[in-house]
Amino acid sequence: MIYKKNSYVTGSMCDSKLKLSILAADEIVENAVTEHMGDLGIDGIVAMEKYKAMWLIAKNSFLFYRRPTWRFISKYSAVKLILDTIVEGADGEKFLHARTELAAIDLEGGRIRKAETVGFTPDMAHPSEEEGPEFTRFPKTGTEAVDSINVRSTSLDYCYHTNNIEYVRFMLNTYDIEFFKTHDPVSLEIHYGGQSFSGEKLDIEKMETEDGDLFRIVRDGSEITSCRLSWKEA
Image (cartoon, rainbow, N blue to C red; front, side, top):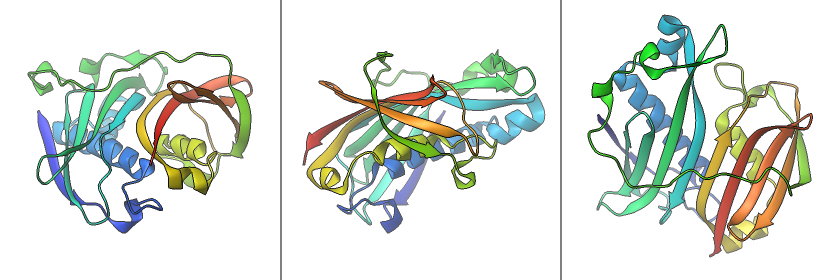
């Protein structure tokens, strides 16, 4: 099944260059995934109320081809359970391709559930695979602490966990405005390995590599989230 939607790039979705921001791109992808799952009748609310489970985003990987500007008409679509979200211009030019891996978690036991126990059926899958970003492994050592934050209530989602997009915001806040003026994103890959809650202190660790900046978000020494952000000079 393919879900499609047309929309504008609004002012609130733009960064200081009046281009689609990384956070807005992440929101588009997560909204597309959520709306697609809703069309299939297996979104988070259904999973909680009917199957006593919830869908968690385990991984997200983005490739940025070109970022649309304010008021640009775009469309996006999501495909499959491992969902591919593609953002295109009205003329078909590709701006962004993201791949999202979902996992169903049992609300009572906390164990991973098979997708078919949460309403998914094989006929929901798109018949052909999309070529797109792949998931990679990140090193577990070498990063150094660059910042720390306390999770606030406005950073939580409907399950009272820190919203996925907030982790991206935490990492982006380690850059200054001059960096954003002179660089554009090339790719973003993020792995969600745990959850955090209101009031908790999180440490942001960072390391520069040839493939981009590697981040680890750590609570009491244990990794919750890891990410690689790659940039090019604007």
